[in-house]
Image (cartoon, rainbow, N blue to C red; front, side, top):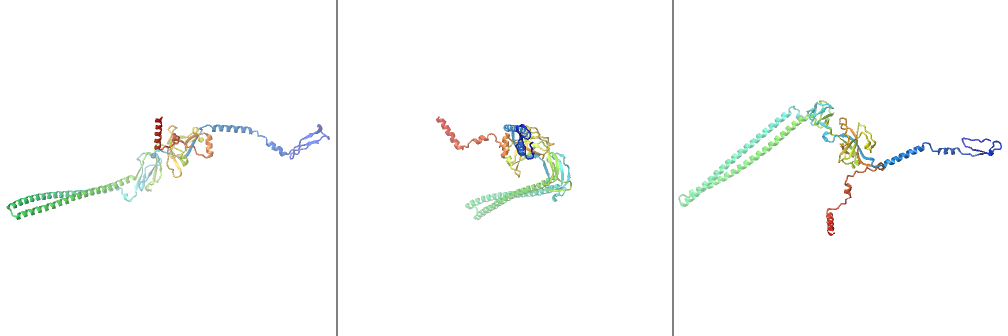
Length: 454
């Protein structure tokens, strides 16, 4: 009897007794479930497992070897900004209207090259005080008339001083004559007194001589009083002359100031270029358009070789940046390749070197700090200014310390900051303990005494 196998339910193995087939044969069926054999087939190792395992092991070994190589990753601080100039006068200059006026004519167009002092545009003043075409000449005439009037007043004051001095001189002469009269009257009195004692003249003559002395003394006192009056009049006239002169100086200075303001205002109507450069943008329209004081008329980019890059970094990154640090820059429009980012600057292509020159002491109002970067003289030069224009976007990375890859991976996984650069000598300063001056002197004295005892 032949054995039968049902594939859906069982797999059978048959054993035959005595090695014969027929009626005397016996059958032994060992039934094994089908799902058992399926699980065993699944346990079998795939053919690609061993090569894949070997590849992973090799990669992990290489990664560990590279990770433990010291100083293979350059820590950096990234930021972005624009290209600018280091010197303020080399940055784009804004030409503003200095007066309220009407545009008469433009002398330039966008993209035109100009020299310092070239005329950009001409305005016409619309202030009612300056509408006259010859307002400068009119103001000059007003100034001259004012000066003439003040000079006339000064001359009159000088004449008053001369008159007062003449009256003072006359008073002095009168007083001198009165003094001589007093002396003569006294002499006559002394003579009359001597003659009266001798009985040669009458008593009445002596009294008359005495009255004459008193009269002359009164006249002398009156003359001296007039001298004092005239002296005070001279001082008053001189003071008035000084006041007239000071007033004249003030009035003429005011007239000169007004004339100067008028002249300058006329010059302000002519817009000139402050630097050599190129007209980048004309902000206002053509002739007959009114502009107000302070309105932007045009922008001029100076012609200069001075160049720098300003990048903005966060307050956390600004705390670990100091001047003199190397920087790698990537300019927009100039292809660059950095296989592993800025962490391996030695194998990057298309980046340019720079040095941190300035770090702003305050933020820009949004928590960002500006860092000015100048070209590194020891690196390749930056692109020509004809192609690297001011305002070009730039990405920068300030280089910090070199660390191992395993440390950098551990730092980033834990969210720790970069290593803070420490300048030379700071560790020594920190390690030294503070000793007050007085205690230090006492210590030096004790050390000296110990040496002497030894």
